[in-house]
Image (tube, rainbow, N blue to C red; front, side, top):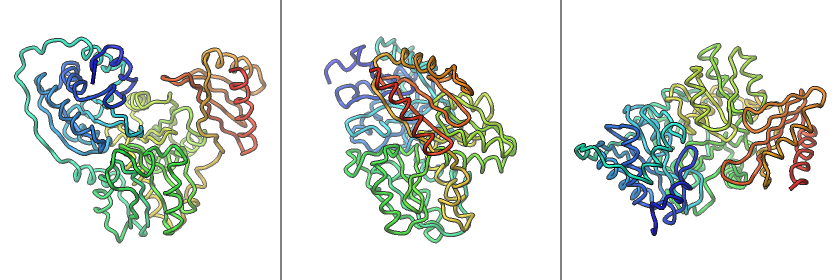
Length: 458
C-alpha cells in the first residue's frame, strides 16, 4: 500500500492494547515486518513465538513479522494457525514472548497484532507498545546481532491437554452445540473435545470451516444477532448447552437449554464459585460493569472480590498484584491464574461444561442462583462532550439520598436498588451506559431515565 509507514497511519492503528486496522489500507506485510524488528528491539527477545488466525492476510503478515524479528537477531517459533489463547499458552508453556496476528471479532476487512512478553504478560501502550510504535515510525539500526532462525512448532495438542487438566469434564454425558463463527474455535474445539470423547461430550458443530470472510455471521457473540443461529440449533437438537466463540476464540458466550443467552456476569460467578471451592478465601477480580451479584456471591463464599477498571491490562495487572485465582469481564473475557493470568474462552467453556456434567439439573437451573439482577447490556450514545455529560450526571445524582458515586472508570452511580456506569469510548465520540436494578422495572426505569438525560442534551 502507499505510505505504509506514514506516521499518522501508524499512530492510528496502534491502539491501547494492540494494533488494529484495515487491510491493506492501514496494515500490510511491510508494516508487520517493521513491527517485528521494533518488537524485538523493545522487548529484548531472544526467541519469539508467532501465531495467526484464519484471515486471508494473516499467514503472510505472520511470516513478514518473523522476517523482521530475525533481522533484529531473534529466533522465531511459528506455531501456525492458533486461537489467541493458544498463543498465550505457547508463550507460557515455552517461556517466550508471543505475537498473534488477528483482528479478533472485527469484520473481514480488518487485521491486527496482539503482543505479549514471556509467560503471556500483556503489552499495552504504557508497557512497551508506544515504544514499539515509535520505532516503527523512526527505525533504529540493529546492533550487529546475527540474524535469527525460523522454526515451526505445533502446540495444539499440548494446549488441549493443559486446558483439560485445569477443568476436567467428568460426570453425565452432554450434548453441546459449538458455533465457531468460521473462526479459530473451528480449529481448537475439535482438538479439545476429541480428547473428551463423543461418549462424554457430543459436539454439534456450527461453522467450523475456517473462513476469514465470515460468510455466516460476524464472529462477535456479544452482539445478540450473532447468537440467533446457535439459539435455534440448541432448541432443534435438544442440546444441554450452546457455546459461541469470537473470531480468535479468546471469548466465549453461553446459551442455555432453553435457547436463552447467559450473561457473562453469570458465568463469571459460576467459575468464581468453582475456583473458590478449590482455593477457599482466594481473590476474584471483576470489572466495574460486571453485575453486583458477582462480588456478593464471592463474598458469601468466603472469597475476596476486587473491582477493577474495564480492560484486560487492568484485570491482568490487578491479578498479578493480588495473586487472584480468576478474573471475569462482562465482555466475555475470563482470566485464570493457572493459565498465566491470560484469558481463555475455551477454558471458561470447559468450566461451564464441568459444572453442568456434575449435576442432573439443566443449565438454566444450575445458573439460577448466580443470576440475581436484571442488566441493560451496554448501550452506546453519540455524545460530543463526554466529560461534560458525565459531570452533569454526577451533579444530578450525587446529592440524592442513599446514592454514592465514584470515578474508577468513567462515572459509576450506585444505590441499594440500582446502579449505572457511563464510560467514554477510547476511539469514538460515544458514551457507554450499563445499568442494573433489583428487578426488571427498576433497571428499565433507571436505564431510560439516564438515556433520556444523555440523549436529550446532544
